[in-house]
Length: 278
Ligand SMILES: N[C@@H](CCC[C@H](N)C(=O)O)C(=O)O
Image (cartoon, rainbow, N blue to C red):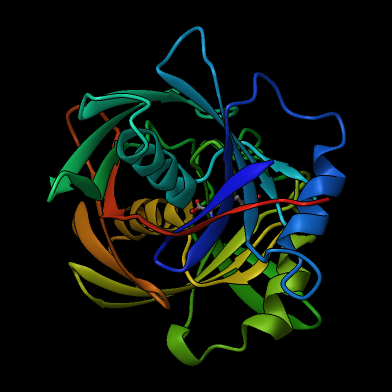
């Protein structure tokens, strides 16, 4: 079975195309292939499948074998893959996702290859029960949450997948490993949660570090960057356009007032191709 390895700002994926559906043991396959010592190594396994509603369908399995509804960095990687490998020759394409519907994607080329991708990530979901959280409120903004005797405040945003955004003094040096895993499985989040620790530098620039549901600490998270911008607007901390700076690099995020959609722009890179022997 052939695969390609792509990443978006260091959030890396094993990408498999040419199949019609997910294999039945895809959870075990993801765990095995994503292992950084005994496998290829990746944050997730991504399948590009045929779609009846869009040009392609994307399915993303986290490195722990659980399936995610959406992935911002993976959708940019999928978009680069299908264009650069000649599966489509348009620079405006559509990609169906499991939890965020069909997304419109614009490909920006350099020397005939995709260099950056702008994705319409759709409307954020803010209703507490729909994110989902256990908080029955129309918006969950700066809500208290206690972990091991420490109180944080979080803002809940779903971009198809659930996020909990927490403002800290120094996101870049924050002890992700101490708090991320505990917040990920906190009972306030019935489907677990991706956790973003954020420091706002000014109204157009934030630092963010992420602990991902099902994958742990990653270098970047596209949906997490979108959730960060939405949360920062709701908390009055940034304008509706900002750079979200991650460990692996920067994403530019816009939350459009007219259509309420969030737009994400960033790079995608293919780093190698290979064959899975067993
Ligand atoms: N890295 C991603 C999100 C991947 C899925 C996530 N771990 C989840 O379980 O929701 C991104 O770039 O958005």
